[in-house]
Length: 453
Image 1 (cartoon, rainbow, N blue to C red):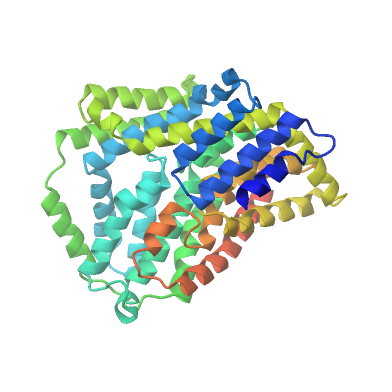
Image 2 (cartoon, helix red, strand yellow):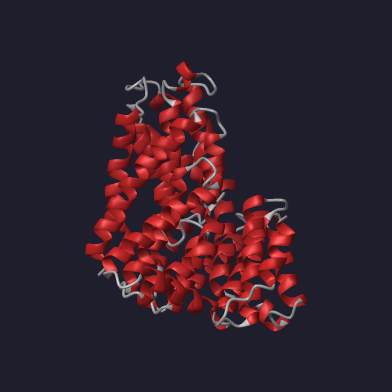
């Protein structure tokens, strides 16, 4: 059925659109469907799509490889290596337990501590999956079970675990939105926005996100605490648990200290590099050079960092498709059609419609990457063509790329992992996600309309 539908699409070229542009869109759409259905990992699916683009002569071979030279993609790969150093030295784990030790007297305080951990790590680790699955989730689960809250048991899980799992997941989305390095899709978004004259750097991204971000950090745990409260409000043993874990870890090793110094230096260079003429890629390459020279990681460690190489493949190919769709005129064609559909509404109304549609369309996507790949460029083009200020449109869609994953348990890999622990029933996960989606839309689009225009 899917093959026949694709075949019909292939020969149904819309009037006014170049045939190659349509064929590349069909290949792109098929690739996105493959990402969602997951008959194979994303890398092989993307390679099959690239082969089809070349085999059908939709793209010349030299154009098929253009995405692999994108400096932003290589920056992501390099920062993944640095994140591996953070995990290997156990620096991320130490940061988490230090925060819990400081604020873990109550369940609400512990929730804020977990969010603070996410935010700190979000400035350094570009994968929300790596942060949640590799560092935060194991710690949260250890804390819950250590304090007598176990999964798949309603009475036990509601003591603490259910509350902390929801807060941890939503905190992961906040850290993903706050920083250009917060999740893999953000540099991809940055590249698309640049084509429309919106230039975002690490520091400018944080400048635009910081005020709504702080408000979200303050309000989100309070709302969850009211609508889905833990049964245990006071946690006298949490600090003791964190102290015991830190005692077991012992003092910071030399390599851990090196890693901490490097991360502080890199965040500083990312923040002020624009004024010094230092690019984000240069900072990431500097970090990789340091961890190799100091032997924090070996070359074999980097070779075995599968996720980094996996991302290099599929994200480079998606970038290739994005460049091809732009150069062949598909984005311009789609924008004209969508603009005609929206009519002569005020740009404020168009902005609201685009963001709401973009946000809730995530119900149909199993992760953030296919959602951004399928819709961000097109929706941004429509918004700008319809008179929405380019910066406002680019930023609101960018931040909602992260927050839209709040809706379901399959909206991101991090969500799937946290839901899979068994602490939160699906009904609660979805209902809390929907209520919080209203908060995110109100805060980020409402405040953004004032700050970003």
